[in-house]
Image 1: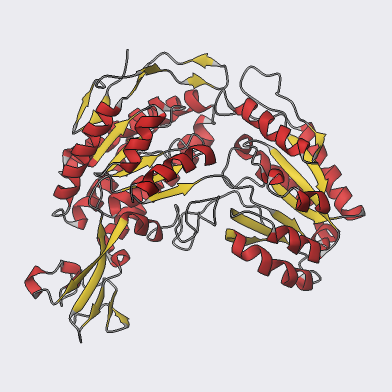
Image 2: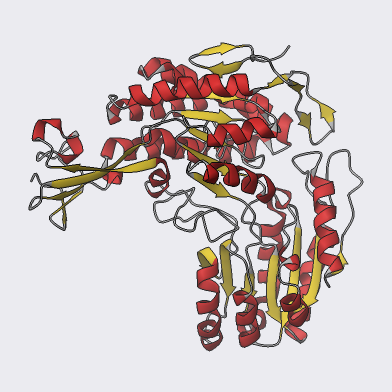
Amino acid sequence: MTHPVLVAGSWRPAHDPIGTFHATNPATREQRPNAYPISSVADVHAALEAGHEAALALRSVAPEQIADFLEQFADNIEARGDAIAAIGHLETALPEATRLRKGEMGRTTNQLRQAAAAARDRAWVNATIDTGTNIRSMLGPLNGPVVVFGPNNFPLAFNGISGGDFAAAIAAGNPVIAKANPAHPGTTRLLAEAAFDAVQASGLPAATVQLLYHMPPEAGLELVSHPLVGATGFTGSQFAGLKLKEAADKAGKPIYLEMSSVNPVFILPGALDERTADVAQEFYGSCSLAAGQFCTNPGLVILPSGEAGEAFAKAAADLFAQNAPGTLLSPNGPGNIANALGTLTEHGAEIITGGSEADTPGYAFENTLLRTDANTFLANAEALQTEAFGTVSLLVFADDAAQMAQIADALDGNLTGSIYTDTNGADDNAYTTLEPALRPKVGRLLNDKMPTGVAVVPAMNHGGPFPSTGHPGFTAVGIPASLVRFAALQSYDNVRPHRLPPELQDKNPTGTMWRSIDGVWTQNDV
């Protein structure tokens, strides 16, 4: 059986498909039974045309109705949670009960409900009223559908049809064309069914939610650059992301990328003197979480040369060596890690432990720890920041805080950066030297904690300087800030009162919405 795509409000066979593909169970290397279509440009064009019509129709839909859809979708996911978690486990090998059913599913429905609350509240539109000139502005939806490419490592919370980009785009008033990740098409299909049922129940335009499973690269490039597209959200590899960005930029289409990040962790001397074993355990736990397949995985650790640094390296290496590797998400995982290790070792990194594909029934790679010195790193900074998407990390030994700051200055952009210090202030001077160099290189700066774990709260920044993302001013997590990516600034100059959007009329449309009126944030009427 070849599953249908969801286009223009109906589940139908793909038009002129290139072929089909199957998911693989990473824990057993067995092919899953159901086939899914590889769509041609015929499906791409059909989805774009339907999405454009839906975008026009959504302009007249009240925010409350959009919020109702998001909440109904969250309810539908929970009602079908067992089935979604079961197939998700078979397609990803992620733990069914703890990771998918109890963990990631709760984050997914929480994001949807937070997005619903933001849509209903309306404050995210940043309504600005200048009474002296009678010019008023707000953020509003784009003039076309938002394309969302989901990654393989979060089959629910970052899924193209249910994740944070999806929730933000919908809450901002845009339809979504979801591009499934080929690693978990069955999981995505169940989520899309739950979403489409919510579309119908809430009365939104039928093409508000569409789904294509897979497509050749040239069709993906056309999808993100087509005149009818509004914007794109992408989470995945740097190679694929930059290809899409090139096509979108050339066409003048917004695209928001989350790509590679090694998430440096700097450990200052006092922290090691105080709690080496504890920090080593935290490091291993973070690096090995989900077999190291988190975008915030600590892939680079900078620590002091000398006895304390060597003690940390030994403690960490013992943990890496003593624990069994986790299952990787795809058949390409072991080969990709091996290629990254080749780059690292060719440029001066030495393997302490691990370094080979694991002999297991599923796809796995030995937990791998490498080391080098600061001078070698600084001479080969680009190559030694190669990301290995697994339980792999490079230790860099530095002479002092000044050399650590040099390393920070040589870093590419990252999603996160962490600094460990002692609890009594002995590292304060070193911190003052290091922090100014690290701060502009990361989206989220952490103290005394590892970077894995991205809280879905308004202040979160899951973004960072290039190449961790395509733009340092935006976040993929954190509502309402994440909605801004999928909005256009709309200004109204001397427009008659009854022609203004409700958010910009003199009367506050909700009574509680925050608006800037003559430079003062207020909930009052004009």
